[in-house]
Structures are given as structure tokens and as C-alpha cells.
Image (cartoon, rainbow, N blue to C red; front, side, top):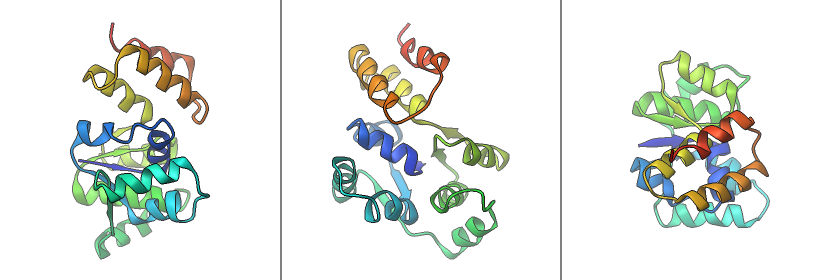
Length: 163
């Protein structure tokens, strides 16, 4: 099981690889707040349509937080976005991996003993698990450069996954 925030959700929709996540992690969850932010209030786009399709096809489950999750989210730093707080709160209640690319929520999650992974780490794992081949890996990394900032060192790390 993995819980994703909006950055990772959007990244995988952008590269049209939302199908990879259930194959790697089984159940894929996003908090209701992430769905609202990434789909309901977002401008119409192919990215948004891909997310809607994945939810309709039940490859992504939108989860309404419990009262306890809401209490936890409210106690998290207000410097985090609404979706980030709920992603962490659900990660705590479900005791599972959370996916985010943002540094602040990663730091808070680690302080709370949650395991985290980002888009680049997931792409590397997908390649190692043979869900995408070397040529596709290069294409995906190139597409991600359009929407994410990552260092050359991190790019080399992901591209050397098959070595």
C-alpha cells in the first residue's frame, strides 16, 4: 500500500504511467483533499483526465479521512499544504509508505518514522522491477524534467538503475 500526495500523483499522470503504481505497491490511496486539489479544482487537462480514469477504474482509491486522521492532520505544521498534511496523517493511520516529492513533508514524515519515496525513486524501482525498459526509463526521465526539479546526480542515479 502507498499513499500519494499531489506532486507524485501529478507527475505520474503527466508521464502517463499511473498504471505502474498498483503493480509496484498494490493498493494506491490518495486523500480526498489531494483528489480535490489535483482533480476537482484543477484546470481541465489530459493529466486530470488520466487521474479521473484511474480513480474510476479503481487503480487509485480516494480515501475520506477519519476523525482521528483529521485530528492528526490539524496538529501537523501549518507550513505543509492541506493535501500533504492528510497524506502524512493517512500514512500514520495506515502504517504505510507515503509518496511525496516535496522536502518539507518528507522531513516531517521522517520525523514521524514514516517511510517516504518520491517520483524518481518510484521510476527507478519500476525499472528495476522490469515494468519499464531502459529506453522508456530515459523517456520518462526526460518528461519529468519538464515538471520537476532534480539534480544531475539524482538523474544519474535513476538512469544507472540497470547497471
